[in-house]
Amino acid sequence: MLAVLLCTLSVMVRDKAILTLAPFFVLAAGYLVYKKDRRPILWLLIACAACAGVLAADAAAYRGDGWQAYFEFNAARSELLDSPRLDYSDNADVFSAVGWSETDYEVFYAWMLADEEKFTTQNLEYILEHGRWNPVTPGSLVTGFAASMDAVLKFYPFCILLLCLGLCLKTRRDKRLPLLITAAVLAAHAAFVVMQRAPVRTVFPHYVLGILFLLLLVDYGAFRLVLRPRRGAARDAQGGRNAACTALLAVFAAVVLMMTCAIRETTYNWNGSAYACYRELDDYIAQNPNKLFLSSVIAGGDRFRAYSVFEAPRTGALRNFSLLGGWYTKSPRYYEFMAAHGIGNMFLSLVRTEGVYLIDRGEPELIQEYLAESYGIQTEAIEVEDFDDCAVYRLVRKS
Image 1 (tube, rainbow, N blue to C red):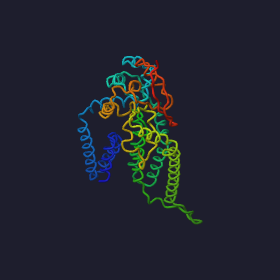
Image 2: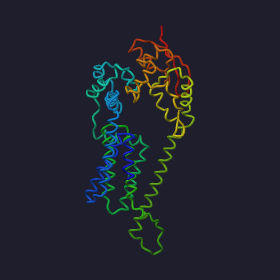
Image 3: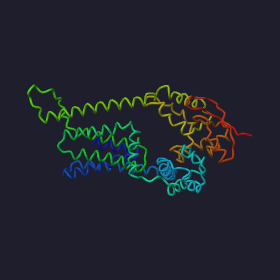
């Protein structure tokens, strides 16, 4: 029952979680049918029905109010931005066909999608259909596998998975299920490499689930420490197996400890002074409710690291703040924000609307170049406030 609840909750949080759950569901169902044990299959069917029900309810809730147009755009956007970056020179004819210059290309890949005319669903679908990506070959599959694993905690999950498999093989008589689970994890990883998806969100959860399943299958009765036998006593096969299990467990603990140190090294400053500038910036935004702040996506990307579950921006503190793109672009909430602040074009509002300010990391040269090329507006960036990692600018039209 708890497993059904957790599966349903995971799908409610993110519908793509079904891609993580499906391989293990199919594996478990197939194994149970093979073992002629049909009792748990009922729970698998209940879990499938529950997940299908919440997905159907979610689809029904977003049928109207402009959400369908957003989903069409977002599907094309995610497929293009979540795939490896298309080379502009190799696809110059494709980008030219949709009216994109190299500057437009750079703005798009910086996730600044707030141009209603250039970054349309039709243009993105055309690029997806005609773009030329590098084909997947056995060599690129191996390279992608290694690169994505290296990006996820330096191979630690992969090593822990193999150690757990070793523990299962050493302690269990029936070795088929552990081997199938390991194969399912590696196959899912390979599939995501072929689909060219981000490793942290897609690959890592499969390793977590695979490791948990293998740990459940280990026979922990084999973890009896083996003392040095008395002089003259023969070491039996059981003692050797127990010694091997103990050694594997020690290596497992060491790898987990190293991974914990790696995580600590990576996240040491997440809520520390390194990201305090974002909390200061948010306070500044809250203290100026009559001004509107539009941010490049790169300048807003680290905001979540400045907070924790115990500390968050004050309610309503960011009502006068928006990204110049990101995931919510062209959603009903995006248009509600623009209507509430009297904006027709976010980029042009940076120059034409009084009280609108830009937040960027470093000099906003790309946005200035974009305004000059797309609208013929030459601008000067005047720094208003500096917050170490990013700054607030006022763009002024040059005479």
